[in-house]
Length: 74
Image (cartoon, rainbow, N blue to C red; front, side, top):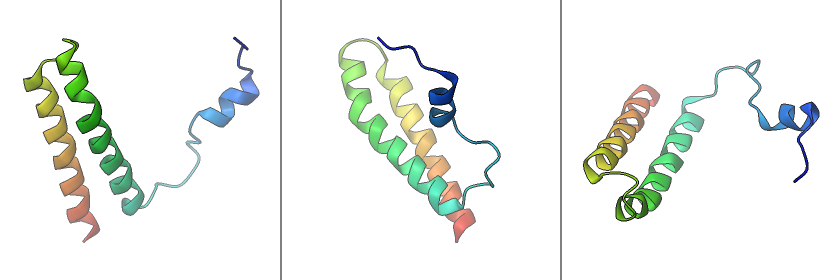
């Protein structure tokens, strides 16, 4: 495996000097995360890596974040 150089790490890490992203981008990011969780959490539950109560609570929390951002964007 090839070691990462500082140059490569700089490209992978976020640039914190960027301005605050617009709400539409934050909402899209949260939406992708919800879809990811809905796809992967059932497998994690099935394999015993996560319990269903915790998994669904986390999904519900992320959906609440999305609703709150959508309210702010309105």
